[in-house]
Length: 124
Image (cartoon, rainbow, N blue to C red; front, side, top):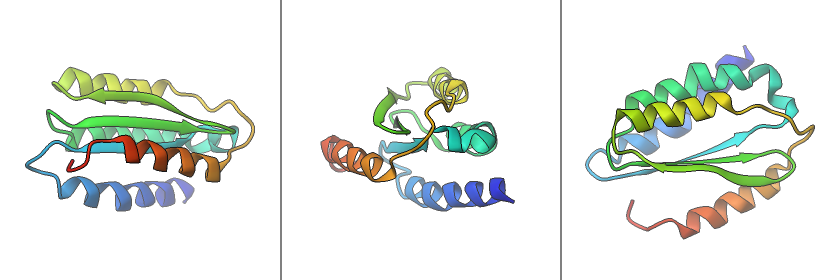
């Protein structure tokens, strides 16, 4: 049940964002809670939702940004897609992440993400 809720939430947010950017490069920003509270769902999220979405929706020229957070937020990966090998590298990187820290600071993560988004080029 929880996996379905997580999958539905991610799909509801990501698909409309990516659907409107068919003819120009897009920035896909994934904010991922990798605290221990996500341990039971972390692998499912990567394998069932994010990796298939990356493989089916990314185009050459798009850039993927992964921001992970637990007690602090950090940019885990920022990579431009030049070909299918890049998509596989990004998906594999997501699957190799592992939740370690015991708690998450969502407010700090959202603040970090807002600052990061403001630094991205406009018009993408």
